[in-house]
Length: 365
Length: 69
Image (spheres, each protein chain N blue to C red):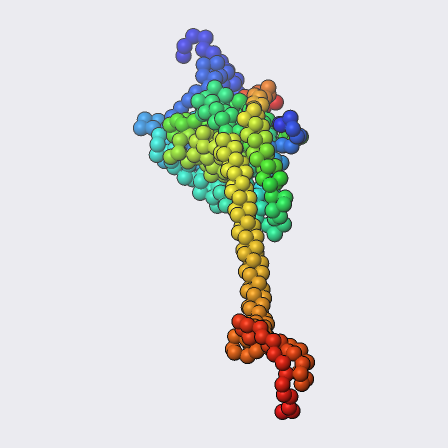
């Protein structure tokens, strides 16, 4: 036995060990492969992290589990090392995330399947966004290029909107909780914004992992305000995109979906007005053509009536001409004037001469 | 907003659509068409003016989201 060894009760030893651990390692990040994952009483989660040389137990409450995990996944846990009263050493997990492409994909697939089974991606849940919103809420990191792009495009395309922006982290362990708080904040406003937009520019799969967080996906799905999520590049798909009412491929695309292009509307308005001018000209042309047709029909009718009357007049003229005595003289007859009595003088008119004659004889026919 | 009226851009766009619909409806009368066309032209001008000068009011909320309050 050494001289003056520290003599402690078991409880004191456990307390002292925990104090020493807390001082030396207030928080540790440990990477390892999950084994013996288990949920007890629907409340407690325990698993072991292992590598080639060692194993350490991990513990957390179920509500802290932000993504489904299973044996074989590689995790990074942020934890407090603790020795419990039963003598078991464990890591009390405060946060964790999958590490490596395979585990990130595995975690994504597990959560996707879970949320899909609950119908959170169902098309019938999707709400339409207003065509021209007046009041918009945005969740983004105001220092990010994605946010700058989003603002640039909405300002180019449209104006007159009131845009409230919640500045949050959009990557890293604190990001999902910050975004959840921002979603709740906007949903608690007395006057709700008409659209809730979440944007973040491109990044690695690990950078975008905050958008594959289960509580964040549920908060987006539960939002009373219709949601529009534009995260990453076109090829990136996150669970936040999938639960959103409308998915945009990028922050720029989110801005394009959110508001119409004022230049297009101006162009369309002038085109509409011009098309009315064209229709008016057409209507005037049709009216003129119709009026011309009606006038022509009237003139035709008048001409027909005149022709009829001219024909009748000609017939009458012919009949009248036949009654002219001169025409009779032309045929060799003569016209006799005076009393046809014995000894009387009469006048005889032929076509070219007029003779005076005495009546020498009168007899009855 | 235009100085000529207090209509919002949305109201102006609806009015323009109504004028377009009138031209295609059975209510169309040549006697009224020229005035309606002039109204449409004036509306298009107003829409352009109003849309060109509209600015968004973007404000970052003061509330911090890094901790639960």
